[in-house]
Length: 137
Image (cartoon, rainbow, N blue to C red; front, side):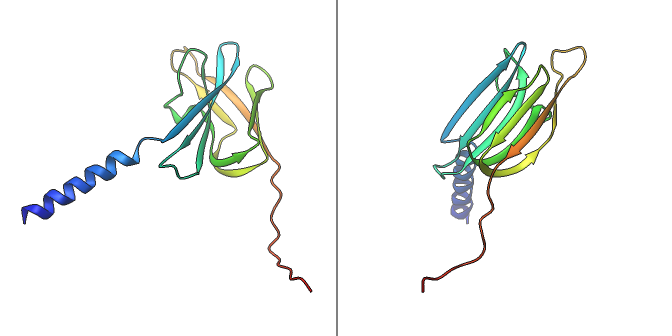
């Protein structure tokens, strides 16, 4: 009776420790005066799927943990580009990919007497794939 419980506990511990850490991660910073946009790309378990987050933060801070600072979450982007249009406006564009969450504003409030709001525009150029099939004659 005790042996199945121990086995289940070991399997649960194995699953929990393997779920949380990316096998590959990179963060690219796009700086603008006192703020920056962080573009984080993560791959888990060598899956080939790249999760991407685009967030704004203070220039001297790491990647933000507060989701209100993020504009975009998605995966498998090609041609992803992020650039500042002005002090508070960001342009995000990509050729193709999957957007899971997009917000056209983000707020940085930590260490600021008043929250600082940023705006984003999103451009995608992915061409839809035709659902028709053709055969050679």
